[in-house]
Length: 117
Image 1 (cartoon, one colour):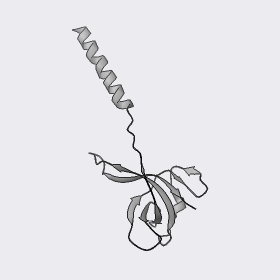
Image 2: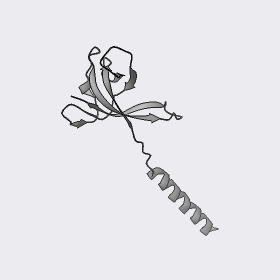
Image 3: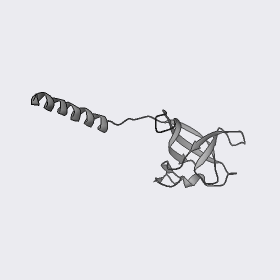
Image 4: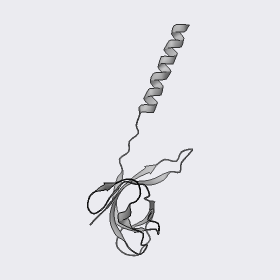
């Protein structure tokens, strides 16, 4: 009986370690366009061209980003997009579609942003 319990505990530890250590990866879709920020610089409207047509909205707060100098930043930002709601900045985005879960909403998420020169 002790041997059976020991095997059961060992199997539980191995399966638990595998589940915790497993990383889930995703390859982002890469899109380019003209970004217009909100007044706080935390979200953008992405447009196919530099005109005033309606674009797709994305939250960018917290996404790693690179400015025109090709230096990558994490944390606050992306500041290269700015906060002037009337100015469009040419950008490239990495977007991953996230499945909805019990504790999160699904949909597209910006995983990185690069401001283009």
